[in-house]
Every structure is written in structure tokens, then in C-alpha cells.
Amino acid sequence: NAGVTQTPKFQVLKTGQSMTLQCAQDMNHNSMYWYRQDPGMGLRLIYYSASEGTTDKGEVPNGYNVSRLNKREFSLRLESAAPSQTSVYFCASRLQDRGLYEQYFGPGTRLTVT
Amino acid sequence: AQKVTQAQTEISVVEKEDVTLDCVYETRDTTYYLFWYKQPPSGELVFLIRRNSFDEQNEISGRYSWNFQKSTSSFNFTITASQVVDSAVYFCALSEAGSGYSTLTFGKGTMLLVSP
Image (cartoon, rainbow over all chains, first blue to last red; front, side):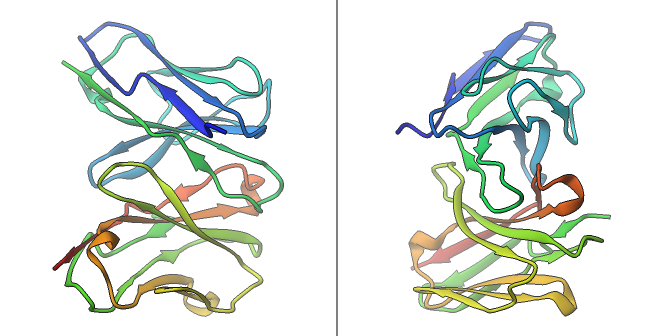
């Protein structure tokens, strides 16, 4: 099992450009998440999908959109990148059954917006 | 107000010292889960432990131990005889019944530096 995979691993964008971060999991998890990590800020939730067909905003959703393509895949789109979106982005998945299970994280995508 | 507070931003110790990382949480729910994750310099996030609100027994796993105290809303993590490989950022997180357990709220993390 590959677990949670993310592509790309690194990306440099210019202000105003768009891009999509891809995430896939092969653990048959029903919940998926996108976080951003900035120095001194911990991990902040951008969007999540509790189950296939649903998405919800997290703590910092502005400037992002998501798509739960199927049970395995959950993508994050930046429509018009801004320097404030320079960050490390983590995707995670979880078998949602009350609170019993932990989240598994992908390796992260380091995004720089110039 | 932060739901999960890790007041120690950075801790430096010398190898073989014991170190405790503090985590204080805030919730109105009676049922919740607490987690610790480790992020080594390589960047990945590694799950360490999960604890539910009804189980206040301390847990020990090798050099790692966790002390959960509902009375003080704390879930502290102790590394005994620290090693250089323990150098990492450690995150505490909370999952609440009120949110359907659907999300985790993370603290800002504590960076642990263990020098030889």
C-alpha cells in the first residue's frame, strides 16, 4: 500500500497563476483533508471531505477550492495564487468511525508563490 | 482562544535527558479524542498515540509515555533518556464529538532539539 500520495512535491508559481494539488489514498478511507503548515502556526485545516460527495470548509478556506473526485482522490485548487499561499500543503485521510481512528498524512507539497 | 495549546515553542536538551512536552486543550464535549504526532526534519507527519476522554490511564511505549489528566485538561508527553533521533516537531491534536469527530484541531507544535 502506498498510503497517501501527493503530487507534485515541489512547485513554484507566479502570482495569479493557477494550479491543482493532487491527493490519493489507497486505504479505503472515507474522510480526506487538506492542511497548510506555516512556521509557528501548526497545521491549519483548509477543506475536508467527510465522505465521498461532501466537502466542507475548514479554518482557512479562502483562495482555495476542492474536489472529491471519488473515494480515493481529493484535489485542492488555487485559482489565482498569491504570495500568502506560500506554504507546505499536506493531504490526510482517515477511516471515519466516530473518533476512533487517526489521520494518515501524505508527504506534503512545498509551494512557493513569487 | 486556542483549543489546543502547546506553550513550549522550542525545547533544547542534551542526549539522555528526560523531557516533557506539554499539551493543554479546551473543549465543552465530554467525549473527545487526543492525539500526538511527530514531524521529524524530513517533514512527514507520524502518528504516535490516540487517547479517548474516558481512558485516563497513563500509557507507556518504550521511552515514550503520556499522562492524561482531565482535571487539568492536559495530555503531556514525556520522552525518557532522549536521543538525537527524537529531534522533531511534536504536535498535539483534539477531535471532538461536537464536530462529529470529523476534524482534528492541532496545536502549534513544540520543536524538540536533542544534542549529542
